[in-house]
Length: 141
Ligand code: ZN
Image (cartoon, rainbow, N blue to C red; front, side):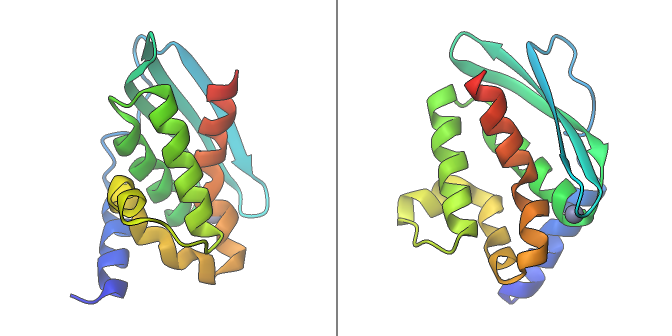
């Protein structure tokens, strides 16, 4: 399987099924985010226990990239500390800006690294970063 089909596969899988797409009972924080240029709208939910993101989910609608990127991010954030989450957001945004990542950063991003090629599609970048920027704002509050 070449990189392009792995990317397509992951995108389809996450945008279609997403067990992460639901409201979160017992959520401690939530935050809406939107990307008017494409019409993507999401709301993120997280359940924090002290410094740890115990659980997370999202609701919303939009293009496949926005929905898949959100789902991948939610998968990644479960069980992470707030600082780890912020580091991952930083890595992802740097990846989308075509900066070189370390091996460790690439490993840490997991499935989300498949979105690397979005950096070649400037009009879709906002779709891909929507969830990550929204979570970044939420964690600053
Ligand atoms: Zn979009």
